[in-house]
Length: 250
Ligand SMILES: NC(=O)c1ccc[n+]([C@@H]2O[C@H](COP(=O)([O-])OP(=O)(O)OC[C@H]3O[C@@H](n4cnc5c(N)ncnc54)[C@H](OP(=O)(O)O)[C@@H]3O)[C@@H](O)[C@H]2O)c1
Image 1 (cartoon, rainbow, N blue to C red):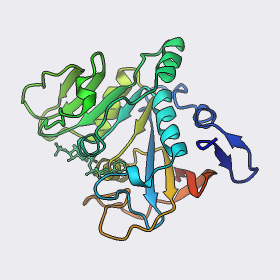
Image 2 (tube, rainbow, N blue to C red):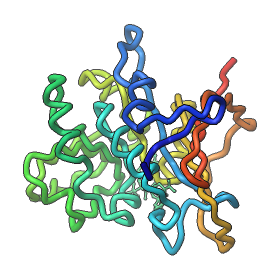
Image 3 (cartoon, rainbow, N blue to C red):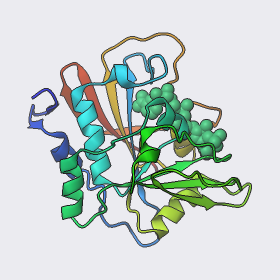
Image 4 (cartoon, rainbow, N blue to C red):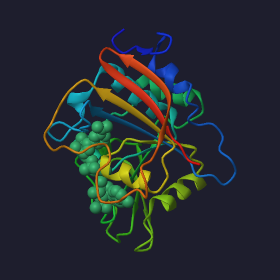
């Protein structure tokens, strides 16, 4: 199958569903711990995270299948407003994935979580028109919540206190155990710099892009020192490589 993933060390073929099941994304967390944060990103062989402003040209059926299964396996999807707009967010899960969640006693859709200081949301993308979809927006703006078909809840934090640790603590208090961060590079860089990333699922796409598109981490925030990663697993599908890294903290 075009979307099978082949484990590099033993050649075993696995579906995206098998791979995600092995990650234990909704496993119980230690008391008081923030939710687990897993990022899924794709980059070209020269490290570029987009082509003409979108990531779609880098993709592969197995990569798309993996992203959708990761969404199926978490409580919440954390995504930047820039990514929702560029990637035209809509229809995030397939019908069988929604049915599987419901059968497991979960909401059919994971909550989509975003953060915008000015409460500037790309309400024109399809996600905001999907009835019954739960979207949680963290902001420090007093602007009115948008009137859209989706169910948008705005969490207003005091000016100067809108920070990712506070956001994750609030998600934890809401019972969220597993968060999938879908980027973009600006949001992910903040997570990394603040030590909030637990797993990086990085797909390396067999392209050289050149140009000046961002890498998977974009912005001004700096790490105090280079962040060492441990390699947990490697799969391939065609010429795409799927790397599972875990930040090493000691
Ligand atoms: N290759 C991949 O895997 C991949 C994945 C995702 C996206 N992308 C690409 O990345 C691009 C979009 O990403 P992006 O980096 O421009 O935008 P982004 O990370 O999706 O969103 C950034 C926005 O989030 C808001 N924000 C609020 N608090 C923040 C905080 N603490 N840290 C960071 N952001 C915060 C900001 O909006 P306010 O100013 O309103 O606060 C900011 O403009 C697109 O080209 C997309 O195709 C690639």
